[in-house]
Image (cartoon, rainbow, N blue to C red; front, side, top):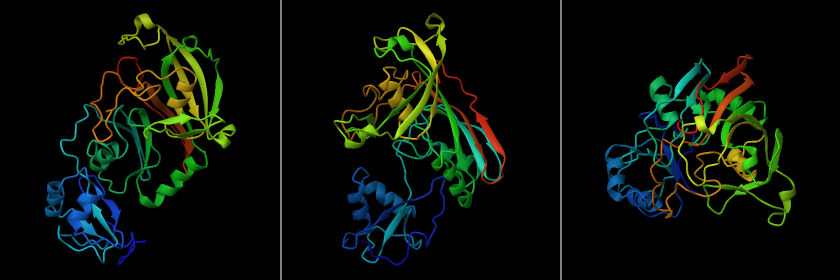
Length: 340
């Protein structure tokens, strides 16, 4: 339990440069001054970096008072702080806005761009860029797609509208279709036929950034399922005409797949395709991790922009809960085996 003077909703810090503040709770027995508490809590950030944030007035208490480095936290419940990334890499592409009204923004995201700040990216995230570009401080994502995936993302313009849009996803009132490129069906030793519905029980892997399917001998409830995807093979690709890099692991023949997720587990489409013996082209996590530092405290390796994950959030359809209009949006991006 934490002690404090006010609740988390008593004060709403400003958005700075498109970035809202993060919040950290303070245990009641904390005797460290503010700067030492933060440096201990977030050991990857140096004392010098925290000092800079204090000097910039970027550390606030629950009621919005600007904190000093040596301030006592005994009577504080939590602190607000603004994230910074030193030497944040710049992504060489931008998202496109394909729809905007008073309630909704729909963006067409490129590969490699995170929807929200995280990891190495803050200013380069889709949310921060849209907040700055559109001057919409309350903008927030209604749903998310993987950083590696390209395509459509919906944002709520006003905070009071957010729950109505998010409820559509919780109640499965949104129809989404994805496109993916992987080996042709005959390249899998499972010889899958299409169309098909793939169902499984998915759980977080021992590597926290991955998901996996579990069998009944591993988990008592694995006979049930928490993930479901409808998949069809819609086009055979002429490999001879596809300008793509080749390697020992690249399938000899490729195909384009249409995927409709019924549920929304993390990495669901990537895991399901891999389970069929047809991992998506350019996938750095499935079936094996190819593009991550071996040491957990080291940053990820630089992205290879020439080999994006071949997965695209292509269409999204729903009845707008605020206007009653039926909405259908389609990404203008195209998957190719060699570029995003």
